Length: 480
Image (cartoon, rainbow, N blue to C red; front, side, top):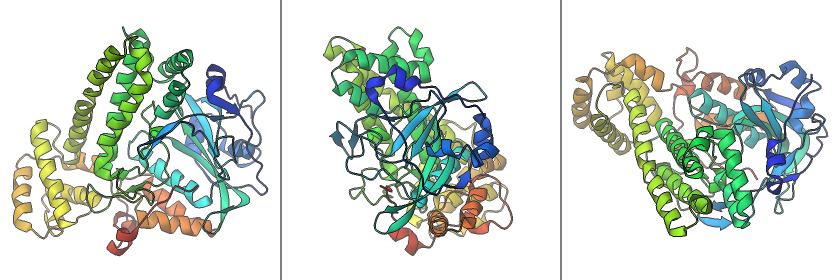
């Protein structure tokens, strides 16, 4: 079939791209293909399974395409690195999907680039399937995210602690513009480049900003709102990103980079699963404040575009940043109102009840996801399944009485609270089996998390948290 891959990023911003080619795969084998997403992109799944597999590997791109590694900087765990970039990734180009939206087609694990900094540029089957299952689960949960199109085994070994089978992930995003992209452009001192990048981002993601009195400040405000909404959604589903560096914060407001990420089980704001986050900088409860910190770094990059006078530019940025908390609180409160089945109850009442419930969850060591699902049964009259989880029954019963008096909507709760999330022990089980050549556990997990709100017979194990011993020692890794 004929594929049109545009090169808007490369042609608009050549200073931020290095044209490059993916490494060849000696024995390619398609492991998983997202046929629904392929259809949205106007790609024939049968073609992708056959002659089109070269597109998924980057080894056979359409004539005129300009694959490139993107340049960006970033604060990594608080320390600024002026030159990061796609060390093992390539932007193949942009597609126009069936709804007329521009979508990036991007690879991970396609080989070393000039940004590799000594890495091998490769990826293993397990981490690429992790990104596939968690990003697609996030999409099913209604969280803005990059999407996974396919994972292709390369037949090339990858060496980490042991030898592992190699793979390439093909993913799709509204774009791969990041806060770190702007930091890189700003660090060059080239104001014209920074302006072109901002204009590119406005046209791509926030076109209404172009008509504002101060377009670049309007761009900043739009990104603040998008990121506040995104992180609130993370918190509502118990997602922990694990590596919220500025190079992993998108301008579009989509979740990107599913390396050391995981879903929280027992509710605890200090939960950390990332093996590289020894100080808990990116713990679950820190995510809103880290997002605000990252946005402050975005503001620093944009200051020359806000005003010629630095002091005035800083004041404008500070005023905009003060809006983050309000955006976040409104989105989180609205989401929590749905989780509690109280859409018409005042926000301060919802916030108070939610805060009390979360405190009790933490004190009793209860699973965050299953609590809200069982609470819906209490709204229908059967409180015993949820009451049976608590040690301090008197305190919970007092809360339960006050909550039930508000006549919660159980059906709304079922629509807002998932039965199935990518439970960490099940993800590890699926990835271990897939690495050994057995995709059946991965496919079963995908079937569960692909429809997270619909309870189905036979899937009970996918709704239960892992053993506490497993969770206590569970760690995730970046995969490089």
